Image (cartoon, rainbow, N blue to C red):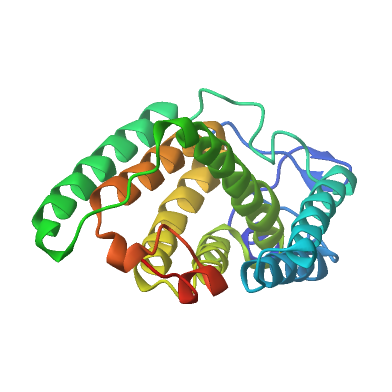
Length: 234
């Protein structure tokens, strides 16, 4: 990344991209000229999916968005290590400990908000589906959005930019937008340091299920976003 190549020493280059140092942070990356278009295209497809009613068109947009993300990832210039897929133990302890602390805080906050209405927990037979969805979200956030934004903006700016995109996909739910932005900041910063999405997927799933099970559903609308949030009726 051009912004950081002035700050950190460059190291061994392969295919025009400087490999990551031992701590997992990428330094000295060259700018990816296709990154703005790729990020914009996938983000736009996600927003269209979020803001259209369920049906054939919506299903087609979701499928197209998924295929586009996979194709652009496969043809991209980023290695599997840069995508955070080869170091399952990197930062795992710090990530899990952070997740336990956040889950505890959410439970405590939810307990104080019981008077505002009941929660709507995701049934256990659907919890595994949400866990898979958490994996998809983290892959898009970290291995697609963040790595491309990092090549354009540098690591620290990319943390904020990726978190803003992640929060925007949860509009107009005020609570989920705020929580997603905060979670995006935390996870992107840890991904910048450790380059490992696997523990984030577990923590993301745990946080999402805890939010649904503890916070008032009158604020969350069954964890819906976009047009689903607006069209929700108890």
